[in-house]
Length: 356
Image 1 (cartoon, rainbow, N blue to C red):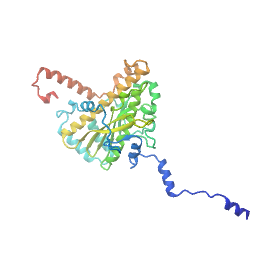
Image 2: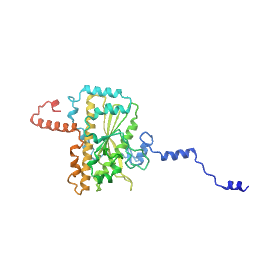
Image 3: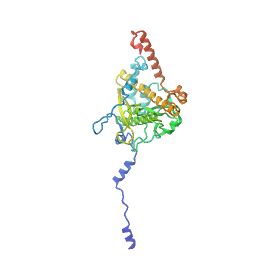
Image 4: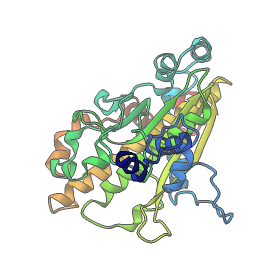
């Protein structure tokens, strides 16, 4: 009887209902671009997609260097002139796009045509989880994992800065992969989701923008880097190429992290006409070169600050000057454009096809 009374008095353990277990599991699970609640997680963390509207009706402003970026990425590239990239070459690209069945085939058969000469192969990678970067939001997110990304060689940046900013600019625990990435591509196959690609681009762009802000702010607090874009993310899906900028702004809420905003830069149908393909590839390649210029300048400034002289390039910069990463194609385009300018001053009647 005493035993029965003891059992009766003992508090019963409260069992968790299935719904409670599901909610707990949902809270602890890391979410990624393939999850429908991923975008809301980003928004709650101050990372906003293109065309976002605040609850009060306001829309995030475009970066203050929007005009400069547009002018830079629209520069003509002689390597993509009709004489260098023919209509037949475009037809082959259309066929390659039509023949792909999987995402991997897009990145191996279609994207290389858009990319052209990639320059320094040590400045490009992809398919590598960004597991070394610290969390972007308070929610649990899977590491970023762009299909293609461009960054700098690790040896370009002083080791002291690398160690200090490791969890912001070193994507992987494999130290020899490109660092401080600020140009990204998300590619999808025929069955892929455009919504997923956009979420990936938003996430990747914010990670890149945060890394650039950390690098630019190293050793100083310069408000001029807010509200400007130094990062581009892109999407290729169903024959369309879209390019977006990502830029940080200060949060209006006290003690909150910076906010990051995504804006559509341009949109091209790469399977429409050869002309639209040339435009799209021009903007893509110029955007990649522009991103490198921003990255290299941020590295140069950080190296200068850590060495006590922001005006002169450091020895680290000089040691990698020969492998700076600008594509051979871009260098050739710049040379050709300069040559064209000189020739046009001599003869204004030069045939326009010859000049480009």
